Length: 233
Image (tube, rainbow, N blue to C red; front, side, top):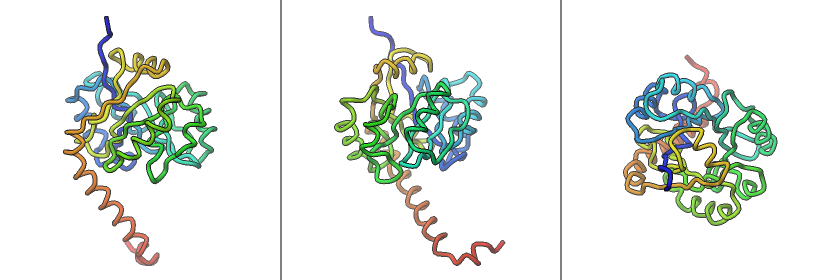
């Protein structure tokens, strides 16, 4: 008899990095979700994951502590870690540190145009490759990752890369079992598979794109301001 299929979202952000939802708001959203496991993966900090886990306190999905680490070559996910992973190091050394600390390393959105590892992801000892990422307009990059890296990957996973609460869980990793330990075992055995909810993706895509555009234009405006005006109170 097949074991029940657990649902996990392995890529979620809060305001502890560049997400729009506070840890409190994210915890409230997760408490209402149908996920069995959720990994909070703020950029270069595990603080968001620790806060969400504390706030849920047994309600909703089991929280995996994680972080999206900025390496010298691009971003990767560290999951099942309890403290920050140093940023800015070589990607291979970063993976070594994650493994030394008992975590798993996931190649995040390998072919996205910014902050991604590209073909290097296929030459590093990742525990899994994210071949389904819910960022709007990332469909071609997802297909490329599945085509180029999927056949040799130890495990295939998916994550929403949610920066808004409405995007949580619309891309998932399914696995045999019900909890975080089952998920970890499934990743290590290569028994996970990504699931993409296209209806939800089309629904949450426009607000995510709008937020991305606002952030991009805001960054451009800040760079164009004279340094003297930026320093004014």
